[in-house]
Image (cartoon, rainbow over all chains, first blue to last red; front, side, top):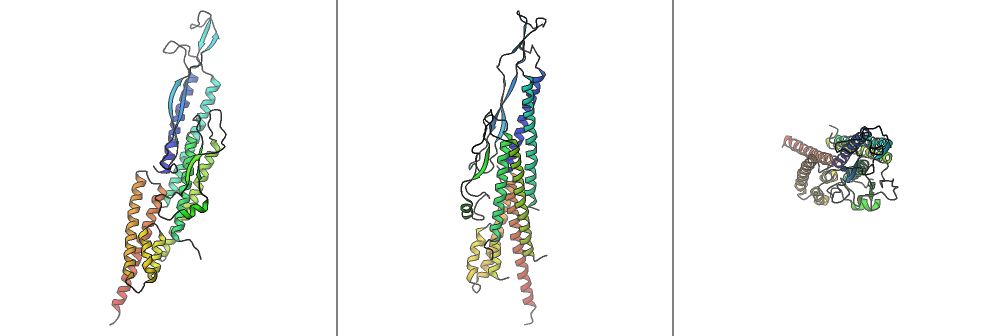
Length: 140
Length: 125
Length: 103
C-alpha cells in the first residue's frame, strides 16, 4: 500500500475511534444520575478500549502507519456510588441509593482528551492531503 | 565539472521525497494512537551512514525510491505516560509539518530540474 | 549534437538499463554502424520508460505505488519521448537538406 494511503487510513481510523470515545463519555455524563436502567440496576459506566492496528508492510519501512480501532466497549466494574437518601424511590432498606459509578470530572477529562486527539488527526489529514497534492504537481 | 549526472540528481530528490513521505506517515500513525494504552511512538531511522546509502543506491535499480537501511522503529528513551503511551501530540504534529516541507522542497527542485531538461531537449521551443 | 552525446543524455535521464548499454558502443565507435545501434537503443529505452510509466500509473490507481514515484515515472517517459522525437525531427531535416543539394 502506498505510504500516504496508509497514513490517511490511520488518521481516518483515529477520527472514528475518538468520536466513539466522545459519544461514550457524553452518554456516561448524561446517565450519571440514572438509578434505574433497563436491567433494574443503576447505570453502569462504559469504557472504550483502544487498540492499535499496525499494518507493518513486509520491509517495515514503507507505508507503515499504525491505525487505531475500538477493540471493545466494556462496562466499568467498579462499585456503584452510595448516597444516603431515604426519601428516594430507589432507596434500599437502610436508606441508601445506589448511583452510577460515573465520575463527572473524569468523564470531562476523557472527553477533552478525545476531542483534542480528534482535532489533531483532522489536522494530520489536511497535511497528508497537502503532501499528495504537491506530489501530483510533479505531473504538471 | 559536476560529477553528478542528471539521473543521480533525480534519484536523490526522489529519495528525499520518499523519506519525507515515510516520516509523515510514521507521525500520522503515532497521532492516530495518541490515546492507545501502551502504544510506543515510532520514527523513521537509518541503519547505515549517509555515505553508505549514497554508495549503495543505484539510480533506477530500486523498485521504490527508498534508501537501503531505512526503517520504522520505536523511538528510543521515550517517556511514557501513566497509560504506557509515549506519543507527544505537539511533536508529532510538528514532525508532520516538517516532513511536508521537506517533501515540498524536493518536489520544487525536481520540477525545476524537469523543466531544465525539457528546455534543453526542445531547445527553448 | 554528436551521437555519443545524444545517447549519453538519454542514459543520464535515467531509469532504464537499455540506454546505459547503448552508451557503450557509441563511446568509441562513431565510425562503425553504431549510429543505428544508438538510435535503436534510444527508441527501446523510450518504449521501456513508457511501460514503466503505465505500470506506475496503474500502481498509483490501485494505491500500491506512491504518487510522487508515479509522477516521476511519467516525467521520465515524457522526456525520453521528447528527446526521441527531437532527434527524429533533426534526422528528417538533415535528410531533406541532403536531398535538396544539387547533384
